[in-house]
Structures are given as C-alpha cells and as structure tokens.
Length: 103
Image 1 (tube, rainbow, N blue to C red):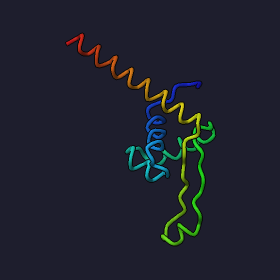
Image 2: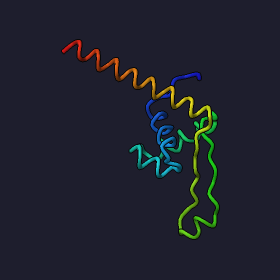
Image 3: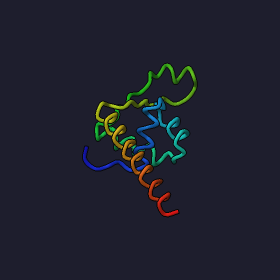
C-alpha cells in the first residue's frame, strides 16, 4: 500500500465510505477545514483511492447552487481505508492496555 495514511486522510476516506459523497458534506462530518479537505481529496484522486465526478448541471441549477463533485472509494481506496482503520484499532487497544498496566 505504500506510506501509511495519516489521521486526516483516514477521516476523509472513512467519511466517503460512510456515504459522505461531496466536499461540504465531508467538511461537516469530519470537522476539518475546507482547504484541508479539498487538497486531500485531490491527492487521493491522483493516488487512485477515490474517483470524483461532477453532478449534472441541471440538478445544481434547479436547486440554485454550485455543482457538486461527488466522490467514491475505488477498490484500492477501500483496501487502504480498511487497513488504516484496523491499524488505528490495534493502536488504540495497545495504548489502552499499556495505560492499564501503568495505572
């Protein structure tokens, strides 16, 4: 898989996995800033972990708002997300066990 993704990347990938499909929705669900989100989305798309597509202009026009770019995980993105979340769970368990041993 290459370099292990950081927390911001994992949060974004997981948000997409959970159904947050466009930038503003990802910003709201993660609490991260738009600049961070959009820069990371671009990087993830170049890496091949997500695919983005623009909604039809008619939909945005009907709702009187800018067009949205929707994202979905690729199979590589799904695998990276699964692996990163499992690593996080292991780290959390390890940290919790270590804290109990010190108490």
